[in-house]
Image 1 (cartoon, rainbow, N blue to C red):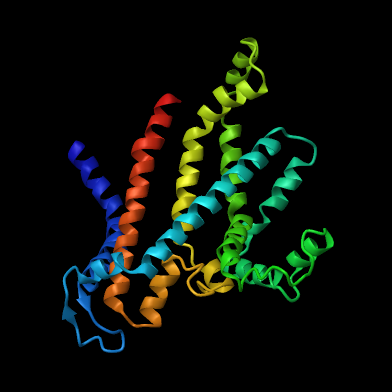
Image 2: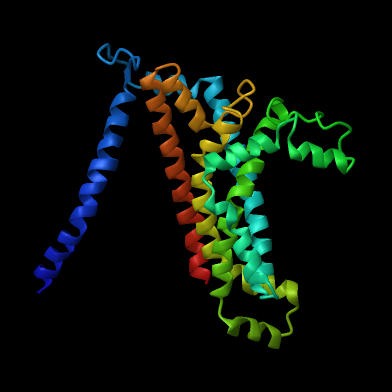
Length: 296
């Protein structure tokens, strides 16, 4: 009987294993292989083995380091703001006030829009000639002219513009996940805190947040990985410009491959990028998520 169960388990896993082998492991092997060679995409036959030189070039490149820093800023700012907004909205909707279901449905609207379309929408809204954002700021008296802030053309605002668009697009995701986590907290915990005389802040700090922590950490981890590989919004809004002020790793690797044709360097950057994401995921799972799950 155990042998039959083991054989059945292998048969069930076989389709998924074949899929992963063909579409994940094999491309990953090719990526690692290409990262050890130097050649142009237009001349694939002229390969030259360079070992780890592509990795050294990437790690010592100022543009790659700048793109890495921009990616870190993008992740921290976007995910941080999205978490705070998502948690605030989830707490409000969890109260079940009249019309909360309608508002929740309306707030989920950005999730139904493709990132590319969202980027185009915000590109028009942030335009310094006819964009509605500058017009609103002008009417409120915050700026003196509708053309004062060059959101997409000025280096100090370019990365911020992409973060704003990302926050608008993906805050509903965190709101939805956190709301589901809040609704899964047993009511008995709140009743016990009331009996102990806890006020609202103490209930939130010692009951809500510890119970919500495992769900929140997983949601934040998913968003961090998603934000790290963002491409559509940045490419549509700024293409990494002006200069390299809003360049992130995904757009830089894309340019390195398609514009400059440097397959080896682009592959090495992709491998470094994957390693960074794996380290980030491992840290969250082992150091953050596991202790929080044990506490709950």
